[in-house]
Image (cartoon, rainbow, N blue to C red; front, side):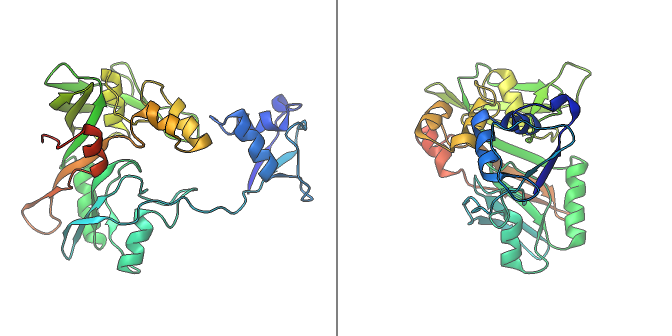
Length: 311
C-alpha cells in the first residue's frame, strides 16, 4: 500500500493529475488506470480519476496482486570451485529482487539451487545485459571478490553493437557522469569536466557493417550505465537501448505502457540493449593466480549482427 499526503500547493488537483505528479515519468493514461484499480478511500470505497484532492487528506493506493513477469531462469556455468561461482547470465534476468521481480531473479534462483547459504553476487549487470557474473561462496570469498571490484583490480571486457559506424578504430572516452535526481528509475547523464564522477572507457572497433559497429569496450571505472551513456555521448548508442538511444527515454516509457510491441521493436532494432559482459579477469580469493572468465556471445546479438561476430 502507498500513501500520499496532499500538500497545500496541490490541493484542488484532479486525482489522476495528483498521482501523475507524485510518480514521475508516469503517463496520464497510466495514472488513470492506477486510480481505477488502486485508489481507495479510508473506508474502502473506490475513487474516480476526476475527483479533486483536498489539502491534508491521504491518498491511498492499494496495489492489487499481480503475476510476476516471466524471465529466463536458466544460466550457464562459466567456472565453479569451492569458493567461486561464475555464471553466464542471460539477458532479461534481473540480479536482485525489486518491486516487480522476486522469484525470477538471479539471487532467488541461486537460493533455490544452492540452499540456505547460496553464492553471493559480487558485482552487478543491468537486467538486459548478458554475460559473466561472479559470485563468492562464503563470507570470506565474497568479501575478497568485492574488494577487487572496489579497488578496480578487475579487468572487464564487454561487446556491444552500436547504431551507426564509428569512424575511429579505437578511442578513449573520459567524460564525467552523475545521476538525475528524480524519477523512479536510475537515469545517468554526462557532465562538464570537473563535475560529476570521473568515468573512463576505452573502446576498440572490431567490425562495421550495414550501419552498425561491433565494438569491444574496456571500462576503467564502474559507474552505473557507464558504457551505455558513453557510447550515446559519442553519438553511437547501443542498439536496443531504451534509455539512451536517439529517442532518449521515450522508448522506455512506451515499454512500461504497452510492453514490447512490433512497432517498438522496430524503433529500437532489438528487444534489449545489445551489450554483453564478455570477459572478466579477477584474482582468485585464495590462490595466487587470476581467474580468466569468458561467456559465449549470445545468439540474439549474433542474429542482430547477421552472422559470426569477428572477435
